[in-house]
Image (cartoon, rainbow, N blue to C red; front, side, top):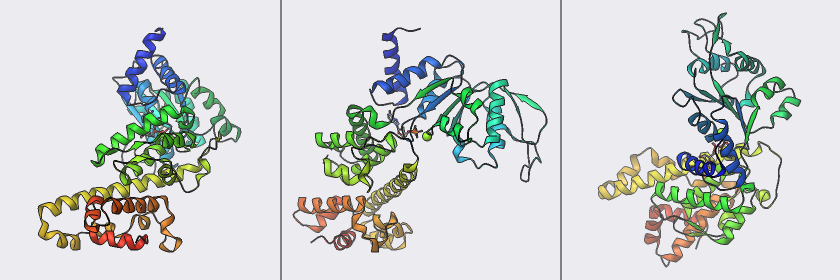
Length: 396
Ligand SMILES: Nc1ncnc2c1ncn2[C@@H]1O[C@H](COP(=O)(O)OP(=O)(O)O)[C@@H](O)[C@H]1O
Ligand SMILES: [Mg+2]
């Protein structure tokens, strides 16, 4: 076994190769375990909250193991409907059910010799769990609608954000399968527990990524902002931090982010701030999905704005025509608050996004001594849109 020095050099290489940011001992330990267990052909269970960064670990295990030249297949068990999951995993025979027009290989057959990553493994139906146990114990499986036993040699890495022991107690997860899967476990620490240093490193990394993506000046963080981020619970972990930094990068390009800006960009319910909750739950999943949708829409709008600017530069005289005929103008006509599904009668100015936008407009107006044309230019919006926003946010 490698000595301590070699291990720490190896960890540095793993971080570079897989783009992992952070120095928290619990995170380093997780990486070290992945590297150590990789050459030993055992099943591995990766646990950790949603957004904590579990998905990179099966990749490390595959790459550092003897199977690295064979297939690596990742399956999100939570995303496959219950009715088709057996057929997806184990394949089916032609005619075994309506729609089975041809024989199909399942992932266990496809990944033969390689690694299969079963993400959200707790979502597997009990019947599928029984099939999974069998293939883990004997390498044997049977296609749906077939009577022939087939063999496969697949290494399983599973991941979950639920407490599997609790699922076992509730009868939702087979106990024998739990023990089979959890011979080796890797615990990915939640973001809050990694501490201020890691949170700051990650925030800076994302700030620089997004400034490159949106071609804007990077944001920086005041000491107070960093402390605030360290206090927050981050129920959506690294994924949530990434989303928050993206919002900030969009609305405060080039600025130093302070404590109020951080608080504004956190979900409306600030109860996570400085509350060290240690129970694992899924309540935030909806929130983080919703935030991801926001980001998609917002970056789409940013792209369109960019295109409009480019088109405007190339064909100045046709800009207004283009605006009239383009279907995307429908999207651009809506304010961000409308797009986020905030009804106009429920005070749209109270969403964090609306507040951030209002602040950005006020700051830009001040910088341009109230000149609306220059302000619109700086914000990359049309003067018309600026007027509408001034009215909407009641800015004098
Ligand atoms: N230590 C880290 N350094 C850099 N990015 C990270 C780190 N941990 C997680 N991420 C990023 O956070 C996001 C969520 O990670 P993911 O592995 O999908 O989480 P989950 O645990 O829910 O599977 C991804 O975009 C991932 O690249
Ligand atoms: Mg995941």
